Amino acid sequence: MTRIDTGAAAAADAPIQAHGTDAADQAAASPLRDAASITPSTPAVTRSTPFVLVGRFLTAVLLRYWPIILLLIAWPTWLLVNGYSRAVAPSPLDVAGDIVLHPDVYVWPVVWTALFAIGGLILGMLVGVVMGVLVWMSPLVSGLLTPSALILRVVPVTAMIPILARLFGYGSGTVVVIVVILVFFPAFSLTISGMSSVPQSSRDLFAVLGSGLRSRVWRLHLPAAVPSIMLALRLSAPIAILGVLLAEYLLSGVGLGDLLQSSGDRLIYQRQWASALIATALSVICFGLARTAERKVVDRVT
Amino acid sequence: MPSRDIALLDVAKTYPLKRGAALAALDGISLDIANGEFVALLGPSGCGKSTVLRIVAGLEEPTSGSVSVGGASPQALSRAHRLGVAFQEHSLLPWLTVRQNIALPYSVAGRKIDGAHIQDLIELVGLVGFEDARPKQLSGGMRQRASIARALVLEPEVLLLDEPFGALDAVTRRRMNRELGRIWAELRITTLLVTHDVDEAVLLADRVVVMTGRPGRVRHIEDIDLPLREHSELTRTPEFHDIVDRLTGLLDATKDA
Ligand SMILES: Nc1ncnc2c1ncn2[C@@H]1O[C@H](COP(=O)(O)OP(=O)(O)O)[C@@H](O)[C@H]1O
Ligand SMILES: [Mg+2]
Image 1 (cartoon, each protein chain N blue to C red):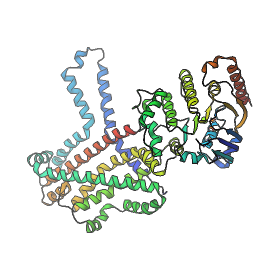
Image 2: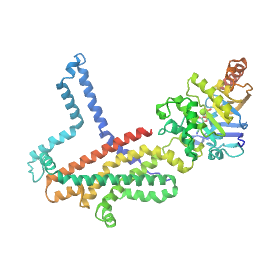
Image 3: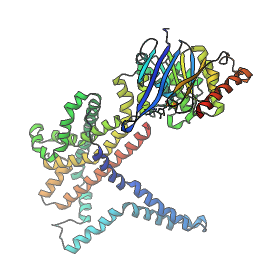
Image 4: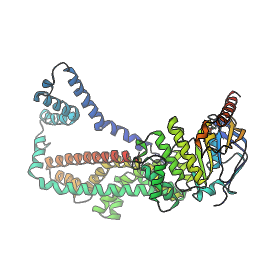
């Protein structure tokens, strides 16, 4: 079987975890505990006054979301210092105002982008896992598929877009294909490494039970690969959003990527910035959902 | 039922180590286990007991010598789903419940799961109330008992047990010994039990094979003529203690050697 380097995927995971809210949770928790321990001698009454509660809440918010707060302060300051007018760069208020006043402009693009991202993500994960299982099971399939998988991985997806557009059209089909191309590889390589990570004692068990290859894959190696597959899902969720935005920006006439592009063309900057912000939020939400799913599933299989 | 005698003839096993070195784990092991016989393999830790068991299970090939089970290769027996093994490590699958783990041999053999039989076994090994628990929620002893139930579930023709009660406290261990003795007296499966507990070996086996270590060799074979499995009260008799003392002495001698 051809060894596939999953180091890159694992390495890519590390900074994401460091940026995740785990660290922020802990950071937020410890000062709160400190705050509580400052007043051990004072009776319980003072601890639960509204003032203290609000203070604690604000501290927690500040510690957890300081980058966003910083951004909201730095953004108008930057506009002011440079003397940029609205025509050049919108202020936070302009952006929020456009979302509040024209929700109808945003609803469908958000829906389309989310649907394409989720659909492409599921399809790409499926393709990756199925390919991974087949490659793991058969050296022949491995020889046939692995080189092409690596090529798809290596060629920048933007460079493929003209060809893909010729093949699949300038619409939704190509958007999905691009997401699948971006998403399948982590699933593919992590499935293979997960399936190979089965402890010797379990292999021995299936050997003495007289298990055939298929039963062994289905009952042992695939379940053992589930944590790795869920890791692939978490890594790929934001990438799926990125892929959809990129494809929409360059190709199709729908979605947030299209809104980003068309509002820029029409010089409606507050709308362009708002689309960018919403896309970011969507990406964060996708990542959060995938991470929650990963935790639940991994807890179930280990 | 076909004859399932086990025959080891002059078996040696060396494990290759790094830089061309090799470790002689077994040397010149010859042992016949008759159909329906219970043999215990007794020896200090590291003397090669598990290696013997893994060779009989078809998980290791002997470096020299031959092994056969019922006149065929050990692998033929596992392919026919007629081999039951409880490993030293429990090797329960973490994503399955106790009941599903015990049912696994049925699924692997492509047979219909007999729920009532599984429930009987769960009662037998004292895991009632834990049917739907997962391995990580069980104590080490409970996991070993689940793994014994899994080894028995297909009513195998050969049973291999590698220190199956190693993680149990002394009291539970005695109880499980008596239970196993009782089950075994009913089923009379050809059995090889690996243990370092002299009492356990003498209580359960028809014959006790004492091994010496590095490389593992057969030092002594003791026939146990007492009907201990059916009458565990005989463990209080002087005859039982004589045998235990003698075998313990042999074990001590192997350690000194
Ligand atoms: N796969 C292996 N590779 C190298 N050495 C091994 C391997 N398995 C066992 N050994 C060695 O063989 C010897 C016998 O091991 P084992 O059969 O497990 O002993 P026991 O079960 O009696 O404790 C030990 O010295 C052990 O380190
Ligand atoms: Mg051992």
